Image 1: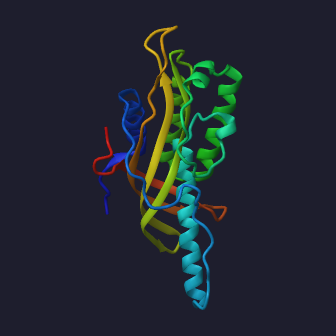
Image 2: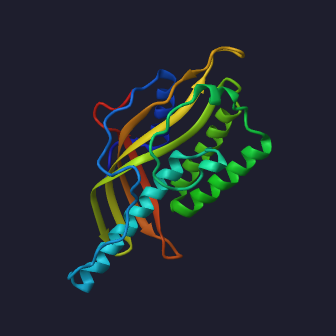
Image 3: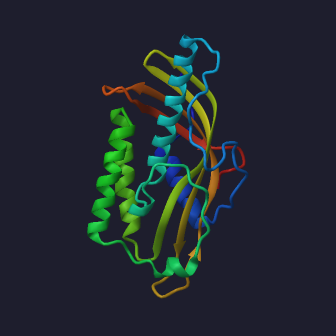
Length: 228
């Protein structure tokens, strides 16, 4: 089945453009901000069923981590952990003191991001797209009138997970956010432009050669009423 919607790269670009427009935050989805897809309580369920459920939980975790990798490209090294994080407040004074990252810092972030991409995505098209997003992100980091502070995912709620052998498909709703400040000219006042919104994703995953689940196709679009 062909899933229609926006590509991950176009969604990322749209959310970034929404930062400039000042997109307002919307209602959160259902998973608590501190939660990640966790362990399954077996109880009295048959062993075969447990194996299927455990595989589904592994798929959820793999998709969640891949989505976080996609959203956190270019994040400061201190914010590089792949976990769901609540939307932080913006401190304009602190943001104004932030300088443009050094060349060495940017190179370190690029190396980290490319390593994460290779570990969580498994198709040539997605690998190329994500690495292109890294290049675009680093251009933004070097802009003296923009401070891309951090990006993240606060919640993920799965509406369907289907696992057949070594392949899986999922549909999920995620709450994503961006923290940034911009100014019109050098020396101008910094403005907080930190959009957040709900996204709907359809994705396919396959078991990789090392036994881990890799995302091979991921298409997303804004949830109804959540786009710019």
